[in-house]
Image 1 (cartoon, rainbow, N blue to C red):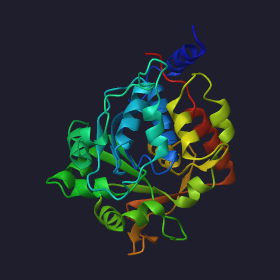
Image 2 (cartoon, rainbow, N blue to C red; image 1 turned 180 degrees about the vertical axis):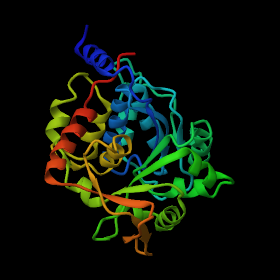
Image 3 (tube, rainbow, N blue to C red; image 1 turned 120 degrees about the vertical axis):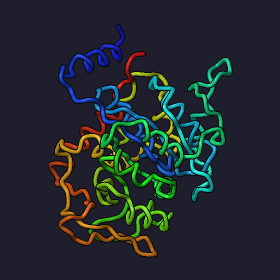
Length: 326
C-alpha cells in the first residue's frame, strides 16, 4: 500500500465513532490575486479528508477566466470533482494570474491536461451570488460557515437577492473573513478593492462575523521549505505548481487566507483569541474600525507567540496533507 493511502486510512481510523458531523463550508475567494488562496483551499480539502469539513461550494471574486478552472482542477486533484463553483460577473480584478493559468496549461507527454478539469473557462461557471443562495437553501439551519478571503462583492450581492438576508440568518452560523487591519485600521487590500461591497456587507450581514486582519497572516509566514519538502508524496501537485508560478522560489508568504479558513473550521482549538465584541465600520478609504458594543456581532482575531507557533504547525500539516485515496 503506498504511503499516502496508509496515511489516509490512519486519518479515517483516527476519527472517533461519535465525531460531530462535518461542517458545511462555502469558500469565497479571489483566487489568482495571491497564493494564500490556493493554500487555503488545500487546508479545506485536508479538513474534509479528516471528517471535519464539507466543501459545499467555491465562489470567486476575481473576474479572470483562469480562476474557476484552477479551482476545479484542484478540487479534482483531491478527488472531489463535483463541488459547485460560481464566479463573479463584472468583478474588480480581471488581470491575468500566472499561478492559476500555468497549472491549467500543463500537459502530459501525450498532450493531455496534466490536471483534469471540467471547467475550461470561467464563463462556463454560474454566477456566484445566485449559486450561494441555492446552496444555502439545501443546508440544515445554523450549520454553514462561510470563509470569505477575497473581496466582499459576492456576499454583498447575495444580500441584494430577494429573501437572502433571512436565508443567511437561518442557515449560516459564522462568517469568517480575511479583511481589515486591527486595531490599526489601515486600509487593507480586500476591503480597499471593493469598499462599497465591504461597507454593505459588514453593516447588513445578519450573523456573527470574525475578522482575520492583515496583521494575523502577516505574522505567520508560510515557509518555502514546506513547499519544497512536504508535498513530495506526489510527483505533480497543483498547489506547488501555483506557488512556484506566483514568485521566484524560494520565498515565504503570509498566511492571510489560511488563518480565516482555520478559524472558520476549528474555532475552538486555541489557535487564536478574540477581541471584545463590537461593530466594524469601514470608511470611504477602506479603513476598518471596531467600535465596542456588548451585543456586537463582530470580533477580530488576536494571537500570542505561543499560538502563532501552534497555528503555523497546523497550517503546514494541513496544507501538505496527502489527498484521500479515491
